[in-house]
Amino acid sequence: MSLRQIRVPGRLDQIEVLCVAVDDCAREAGFDDRTRYACQLAVGEACENIVKHGYGPMRRGEILLVARASPGEIQLELRDSAPPFNPSSLPPDQPWTEDNPPVGGLGLQIMHRVMDEVSYRRRLGQNRLQMRKRLVRKPRRT
Amino acid sequence: MELNAHEYKRATILGVVGRVDSATWSELDSALQGIIDQGQKHIILDLAGVEFLSSSGLRVLVTTMKELRKVGGEMVLAAASDRASDSINIAGLDVLFRSFPSREEAIASF
Image 1: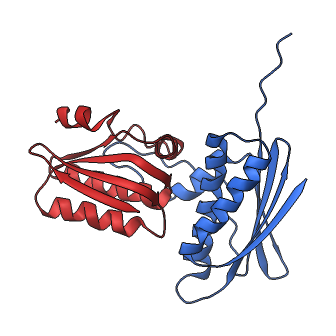
Image 2: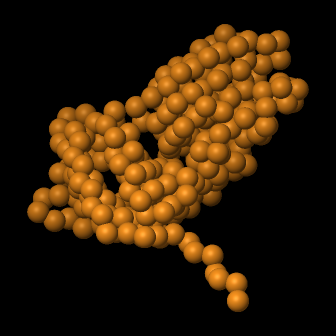
């Protein structure tokens, strides 16, 4: 298992740095391009929530990414010191029509749709969001 | 992110290259709003060069589509990269936009 820890200022222009690190981690786990992109999307959405809704315009803080890769699996943890916010509950699917498409809540939906597990805990004054993705293996032909 | 607009009789094409995310969405929003302010009701968004499309970018697409529909217009997608298509599909927004493999086919649709 490999471990990466990257700390960045909690700013929107820093999210790409963490996405690149997640891509590297997912590559090491053996994920294909599409799955690696899905993992980047999830982390990007989570970080956007931290910066925009956690820290907001009045607070400053950092985001720490702890990424673990093993063959066929990655575990990601995002830590921030913003006020408590639990994004691990799957937001309810809002019914919508083509005449009234959704403009809010897309980020959380994306995060939950692409990751296998999303969990949250508050520890030592930090939000800790954990996400896990496993490679789907094709069944062997007998 | 790079944006390149080309005006045609039937529609305006806006090509997008790079990341469309929480740090860049406002540039795309301004460009699309500028096209609408010029009176254009038909927009073709060329997503061939999009490397990353987050919910912030998707919101721009949805709000632009809503605005155009109010005036009888439409925005369609052209040549979307795999990554742009994945974002749109994962968010369940693929049913909202007509999508074409090329700019030419998108222009012909108007």
